Figure 1 (tube, rainbow, N blue to C red):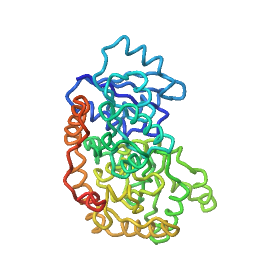
Figure 2: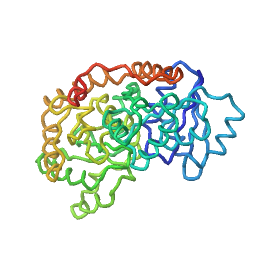
Figure 3: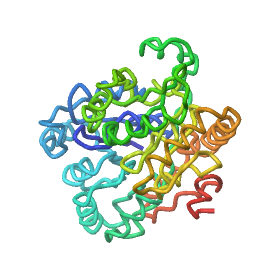
Figure 4: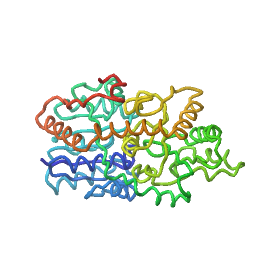
Length: 390
């Protein structure tokens, strides 16, 4: 079986966590895999960090999938035709539909599609039918949106991701914190989870940080917020810190886009309702870092309140409540141990690469045989039980 993997840089899904899932698919499914990355050097660098061992870079203006159509057609004419095209973005699915109409196509959705993408998915699904197109979101929340927009249910099923836990090196904690110029373990670091890495609002997170500082009442243990240098509203987050000479409490590190490279140095993570419900959460679970966040449908699929995380209802006073929960996490070692141990256990139980590879192999063969998608069910516990899948 020859499988061609496609992803384009302009897609919000073109992040390290999605690329690592692609790497897992290539390593755990027995087939002849080839990956084409449509974009420039940033996408190639992210692929290498995500341990994709071999790939074909294909330049395209702006990293847009359709701009690569002539080059992809030329490549297909000079190489063996794939038996399956696995698309990792909606744009690459449109590209595969135009360039590889005879091959079955599979789309993995790791993020909620935009309204435009949902409309496009409905048209592509209607044109291809369940015999030629499968869509596998990683959560029921994403799957529900896809189905509500009119996509044939026979084309859609949920395929839970796998996390490469071997990439998380707890022994690197001191080296990472030294790079951040933090001395010892007294300074506390809270990472803002975001999928894509720059989506979440840094200004909201900074408000939560200030409230947490007040709640901690311990000047010997300052709380730092870790964000991406291109985080949304980063400058607005820094403005209120300057009069107090507290800019140093905001840590900007491009490695925040690659969670396994920074999570060992973090003391907690926050998952907000404006982009914190993605693949970064199972990485935090596997890294043994306690989680605080909003109790949205997407986040509650990963973790459960007072079971594997501390969650608060979204709304106007939510940041104050999150600050209170974060203060509890940072000041109560027994509570922290319970939550992170439960989360890590569930990550190891449900988000294994072996299980993901086995389920994906089943999906590949169902598509090749023209059958309806039917991903094997996972055992139900934790966030899955809370989401009503038990």
